[in-house]
Amino acid sequence: MSAITMKNIVKQYGDGFPAVNDVSIDVADGEFMILVGPSGCGKSTLLRMIVGLEDITSGDMVIGERRVNDLAPRERNLAMVFQNYALYPHLTVYENIAFPLRLAKMPDGEVDKLVRDASSTLELDEHLERKPGNLSGGQRQRVAMGRAIVRQADAFLFDEPLSNLDAKLRGQMRTEIARLQKRLGITTVYVTHDQTEAMTLGDRVAVLKRGVLQQLATPRELYENPGNLFVAGFIGSPPMNFLPATVEGTSVKLPFGSVEIPADRAERAAGRGLLIAGIRPEHFEDASLAAEEERSGSTFSAKVETVEWLGNETYAYIPFEAPDEVREQLQQLEKDLDGDSLRTQLVVSLDGSSRIAEGEDAEIWVDGGRIHLFDPASGENLTVDRERAGRIPGAEVGAG
Image (cartoon, rainbow, N blue to C red; front, side):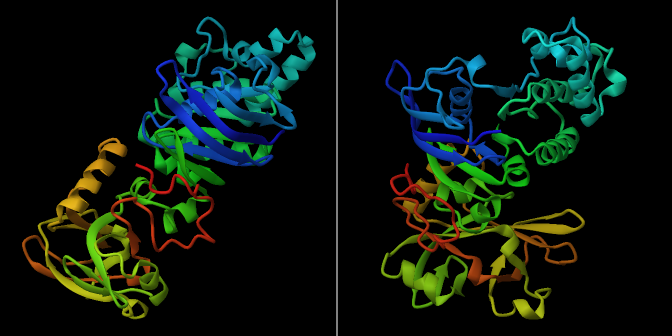
């Protein structure tokens, strides 16, 4: 096993476009690191530079204690699992797993031991004589993982390995990959565009946008302390609500009324004029159902346009008007997030027992202590707790 250190990595193509722009990430020995972001953010390019499939324009790639910029992929001792599995259809499961060992001219006895150990770990023993065409998608993915395991590599690299599977199977495979990584304790870098995979698998998550590192932190830190509008909008499902806001004393004036927030948050945002308030849907509740300990929050009245009841929870949708400055920033953010809808409507997640109905005025409770305030021009989170927020590269906070 080895640590992986990326120092000021740049990948620039012939047209001068930087697909990866000055990214620095330290992956600790045995750590599970996630690279996440929308299409075109540079995450797969960065992974391919780690393994040696893409040349590095500038910067240093260090694996263990070796600078590997000029080493061929076969000299880096890394194992990669691809999105399309890359299995040989004419070979059995056994021979697909054994393939890298055959290339290394390993003795048959040792090959057999390593293959059977891997197949046992991945529950493939009964499929060893079958060919990939006779396997399910999940089984084929396990074969690809088995081929990576037997190599006894210094690190695993995964390039969106679950994107070809259906939703149920993706959930099962996430659990298997997490369990396997913990059992082996091997350094792992995992690329995905799915923020659910990022939040459930990673020890830490690096969020990328247009080739630039936006924030590097644990999943909880990203959720609770997003460094800018982009991270706040990308992490969380449904996405964070963004509303026009102004701060007066310790109150935030929103389209629906004023909400009290902690004094330290108000101080950081004081005197800045028009801001963007970010509030997650789950930080609201039907005021009639808010627990006694929650009553320190604020309530407001608003007309509900649409209600979706899902049994255990209810989503209520409340439209609002936003000034052009805020609307333009949200439209740009929507493009950056691959079209995720950030329309000017408030989405609130309520307990499933709520009786709030469409077309009615409803009393909604909101946790003022969870409100984030963003600068509309830069996107910077003015209220973030920087001691807890992981690494927010100074030059990139709110970039774009």
